[in-house]
Amino acid sequence: MNVLGSGSIRSVRDLVVVVQFDDNGPEIGELLIARSQSKALLLVNHLQDNNLAVCLNVLGDRAMEKNMAVDRTGRGIEVPVGQQTIGRIFDALGRPLDGMAMPSGPDLTFKNVMQIPTRGTSFSSTKPEVLETGIKVIDFFTPFIKGRKIGIIGGAGVGKTVLTMELIHNVAKSGQGLSFFTGIGERIREGHELYETLKERNLLGSTCMFFGQMDQNPVQRVLVGLSAVAGAEYFRDQEKKDILFFADNMYRYVQARNELSTILEQIPSEGGYEPTIFSDVKLLQDRLSSNDNGSITSVQTIYVPADDLSDPAVQMIQHELDGTIVLSRKVAEQGIRPAVDLIRTSSSLLSVDVVGQRHYDLSVRVQALLQKHESLRSIIAIIGENELNPNDRADFAKAKRLIQFFSQPMFVTEAFTNQKGEFVEREATLKGVEEIIG
Image (tube, rainbow, N blue to C red; front, side):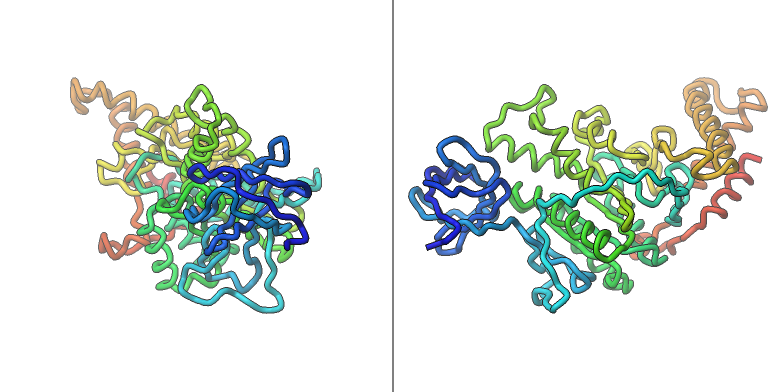
């Protein structure tokens, strides 16, 4: 008999399992084990009156039935954290996906993915530290600042994952910190390609990876984000490291939460998403924070349904970010890579205090030229470029050169494009812009 207490299943509906306890019921977030042949794992989602625990069937076990006994464990979902996890790839439950043995050793510890670390309030101000990515369009328009959040926004097939892979490659190669990558509901192929790319370039030694791919149920797709964050928190707080956290794709996290909301029979919000969308997004985003121990700098891709940037979930995630890189299908069709919409891309960190007067002044001039280029395009379509006055023609030509300048071959696509990747330092980017705009 389980000393913590046991209960019995009252109903099973898809991934929702209701368990009755006589007394000594479980806590929210506790892991229960059903006495099925496969020892099915049940995660307590919420509690109801009369000692009823509404649970989620973590692995989608179909061998459960009414009146089956369920035992408490007194703990939540715990994933391995520590030096032995670097260079490894895990699922939402912390199980290896790379065909290697489970990490072990005296230094290995396990962390509850639901447990939020206590946060102290620090009012000490530190000078923003700019991290160079080697990608011109990012370093110029959305500077990568230690401890802040950047989003890569775009529809399907415009290059979000490729740009993320290039960032991981460049950051890992420059040794600027420990990288965490979490794949939330993305394609299995993309996860495999990232793993092989990092392995081939000997970059696994500074990367930890978690994957909950699109073939898995929504419980695992939600949990994988929390598992990766728990690992990042451990290295920040215990190992005093600066973390670079990559999430692909944050919209899939909301989508998985939405699926869970549906099977839990919650009434959706006006926008069609789960009623708890705000707290769901905040729960994850607030944990991607920095403290006196270390920093977590995050890059998050956000899928845009039907290329609609006004989608409620996209807007909700965007509010949590310091900068957004918008990828455009129109730009991609012109053969420009990365396919960044230079006008819609923005950052609150592009200020004198962060990047300096020179960079800021150049960004203002570049944005003015790009806006003028956009307004002149419709006129040129009617009367032709040669009919413009000399000043407008010169500005239009400069804007076209700038658009081409911010295109850049990538290291992770060398095998497909036969073009050698480029790492361009920020100083070289600023000089190149100055040469174009004069």
